[in-house]
Image (cartoon, rainbow, N blue to C red; front, side):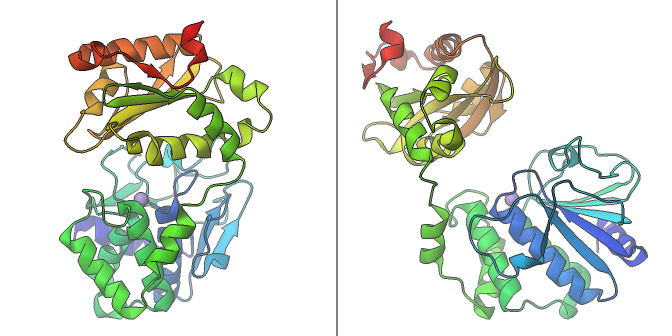
Length: 350
Ligand SMILES: [Mn+2]
């Protein structure tokens, strides 16, 4: 057992009420790992209370999701320990108006992301860079509880959902042989219906269609790159646009942009709703094509070779677009010499 794991057990044994948290705007792996932790730890320590607080629920039905505690503000006042899953950074889990005393209470993080943040001396970090927080927790429980830890039908399903969600059905590089081994263990207990899950998990709200239409109007293809954007003015002008803009952006970015024949990479732009001079540029690419991390870094952002992003400050969309295109031209000389095809680009015609 590693010293962090020993510390984790020591802290739980000393505590009575343990608050379980995940990052803001939790994704499926965050919900699954919160529930997984709560169910397993409650069974191991029946006299202790484990409270998994959330402000919103998951978008699909998960086993035992009624065991999440819905709150308006996160509150640690009745707790003597905090367990954070699927994040290694407390500041993305707790907002200023929450009542979480993470500066004095002991905090244990069970995370799998690459970014390592120093949260303070009262914090313990367990992170082996697994595919998902659920895989990370499964390995942790196996190591610290040994044979006493056993999956039941519900926890087996949570493990599978978490892994499938974070690996995109085993497509992403973070899938390892161990990910498959853990998945197989869980599947042997109670398999989930992967087909049905993927179908439900790819749904988007009706409202997103309005913003999607606005994105599509701006589609521009230059060589093997494509881009789309939405302006603040459009969001304000077009009725119903605001509500679905976030979902529309992820759909356009992840499921449309690179799927146009001849297009292998590109970017989408959207305004930051909290800052009138703030914008987000998101790049996506396909293996074997453009390294979009270099471009994002040059614009002041970062990320991975095939998925990167930039928070950008500019007075208007034109400035964001022109800066982005000039950085792209610098990195990709062939793009520079290609003539853009505007699908319906009112913005540039002006
Ligand atoms: Mn995760």
